[in-house]
Length: 193
Image (cartoon, rainbow, N blue to C red):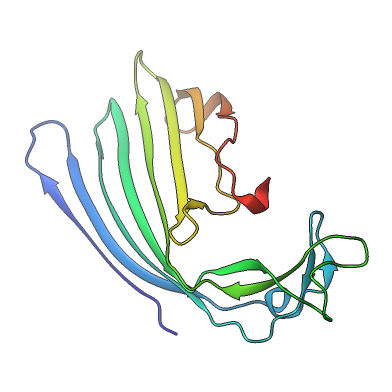
């Protein structure tokens, strides 16, 4: 399979701000790994069995955003959307003529999804000098993925997250303190529950 990317940026003519518009498109793939092909193990809520007939999953991503700054501030705001084909998922299967393992857990195997998946999100990164050498900052991330065939959130999507902090910066050194927060994860797929 083939991966590629094409990115560009344009400086926006806004005096004193040094603002750039950025856009890109890329394509990548993930080949099945040895665990995808040969898993034969209990995984908590299910029992995974092998599937040697997996194909690579492919993803095309578009991202757009703004970034810029000057001596007093720097920041960026980006949005992206990813389109995944042949996503490797876990499906209920029959194994040895049974739908469940001897421990009563459903058999699942990795399989290529026959419908597309979309992942989209936004990230904000902002730092501003409020006093000489003192720069509060924030990084905010929101990501969600939807399985279009099942009309549900895909597995293992992270919750909305943010980092808040303040940095004291000299020419050759800095010190910073920060804390991180994450919203409670309520967007769960059936496999995550």
